[in-house]
Amino acid sequence: MTPQDCLVATMIAVSVSDQNIRTAELVKIESSVNMLPVFAEYDIDRIRVMSEMVFELFEQEDGLDALFGLIRDNLPERLYETAYALACDVAAADGTLRETELRLLEEIRYELDLDRLHAAAIERGARARHLSA
Image (cartoon, rainbow, N blue to C red; front, side, top):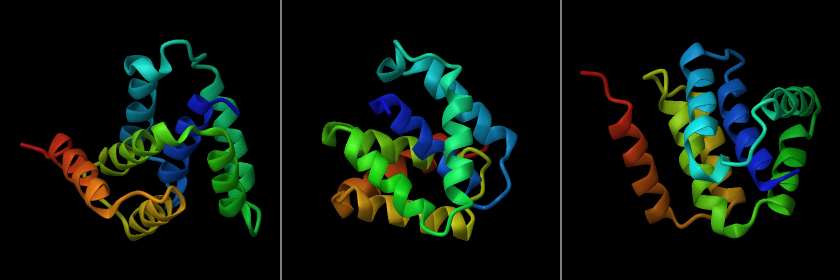
């Protein structure tokens, strides 16, 4: 897995965490991949491959742990906050944060050992970007 694959897998995991993938979340994932510099050389067709991998892992008993292991092994620490920011943006994309999404975000914070203050600032930024008028 490339670092970009890890970022995409994290976004997909948040989207499928409540077993209901919403259009707004898919649009957010695709627009992030299309617009952000970290994905400049990324093949957008890899989103499908990463989606299938996340779906397969989520069907396994310890799939979430396996996903976090892959992410920790392949994502440079300098991109941990980026992964969390992208995850927060996907969770907030449809205007509603569900309990399963909140639990997964908490798990991501823990697994990536993010500073609580930094995580709160990232969460606040995502909330501010996705408020409706």
